[in-house]
Amino acid sequence: MARFNTRAAKAQPTSRVTSTGRVLTTHQGGRGRERDARSELFLLAVSHFVTQRTFYESGDRRDDRFVKLVRELAVTDPSWTAGLLGWLRGEGNLRTASLVGAAEYVKARLDAGATAGPSNRQVVDRVLRRPDEPGELLAYWTATYGRNIPKPVKRGVADAVRRLYGGKALLKYDTASKGYRFGDILNLVHAAPDPDKPWQGELFRYALDRRHHPDTAVPPATDRVLTAHRELMALPVEERRAVVTAPGGAERLAAAGITWEALAGWLQGPMDEAAWEAVIPSMGTMALVRNLRNFDEAGVSDEVAASVAARIADPAEVARSRQFPFRYLAAYQHAPSLRWSYPLERALGHSLANVPALRGRTLVLVDRSGSMFHSRMSDRSELTRADAAAVFGTALALRAAEADLVEFGSTSRPVRFRRGESVLKILDRFGDLGGTDTTEAVRRHYAGHDRVLIVTDEQYAFSHHGDPTEQVPSHVPVYTWNLAGHRAGHGPSGTANRHTFGGLTDAAFRMVPLLEAGRDADWPWAA
Image (cartoon, rainbow, N blue to C red; front, top):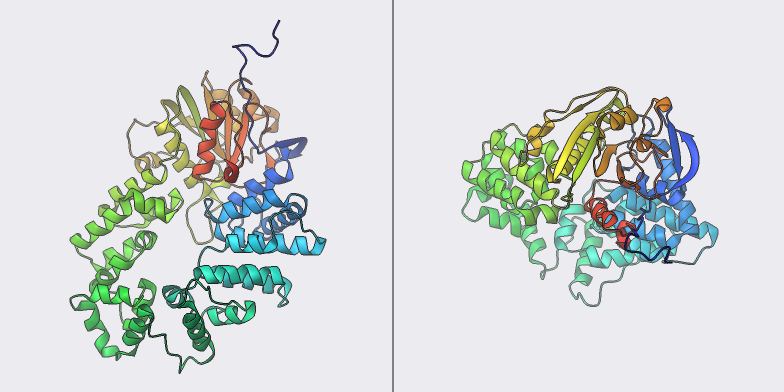
């Protein structure tokens, strides 16, 4: 008689974030589960804006934990660690954590004499995606380990420089405010021009002249952007505003690589309606989103505003910008004019396009406790983890076939919504619910649902109430989105039907359908 190979046999899929079995205490005093090193680093990395504190953990303490985990795994599991770092800078879109991680990967392996796995040079090259990042990585290295920069770092940076440096990049990022100018980096890493780019030799020489002989530096005549920029910079100040208001002024500014950040300084005057309308056509999508208030204050025309709104709401532009959805929420909260509300709502929806459309009945629990409200997404943002949790919890509920959306803290309550309703409108119904009693929220609201999804920092209290995930039958999947990356989690993960994800990226959402289809959900860079 067959014991295993029967029609009734079902897969018991698992996720890669795994508990060790050791019981710890959460920051609130609840009973928590320790995760293995890879799982802890993954959850910390995807929630980590370097130097950013949380309600329970200082920025320095989180940085130290991040560095320690990277250094440990760079030696013991280099292929996995290199994959994580490359994914962080790519699909994860977390710039600083990946740069710091790459530097620490190299340092740990050099100290240990480790050579197995992806090379140090490859890892450095892979995380450098923007022209200012070679300087960022070198600045981190020298501030942390001194000016003796090892060859793998230099070679990885040199590889990136050949990929990234061009005329527009030079104008945008090679500024006097930088500790490492392009010329400094070229000297330091001995970057030779790419043989497939014959123009790059002249560009590199010009970058060196800009750094060391700025008064006599002349851009290569073959580079139209640099020569056009030089012509504009040579204009007397009193003639510059006429360029902005003249027919074709926008095209001339764009051809010369004049960015919105540089335009006010070049004009040596205010960014009025004409100035904004001349530079808006060459601005990137997220630069537009960040400046909506400025456009209104300057009084840009309805016609120009309509073109801005169309670009903001364009699904291709949203995908290209690779921004977290809560960036659109921040713009919505700070833009004073109602003319931006609908395009921002559409943009937010496009950014959530990969949230799965789940079948059956789904319980979505959103953490609205004090620790979520007192932890901002980054030092430069007023948005909190509570904001981010509400955005994603609402999106999950709206996409599900049948969902109950619940906010919880020390108490809990349903958040009412209608199918097809605006995400931004629903967000106004969420509140601040004090402490964190995840267990009671699950116990009170679980009613035979097909799955439970919890968006939280996992720092629950009330340990006498038990493990939150134990309130759900073992055959029903429980998915936890961890937004903070603390060491201890509120329940086990990596076992059948108990799964923890980190970060608010498309890759995390893709894992739910994979698990429910009976497949193990791998790390995002291997999926």
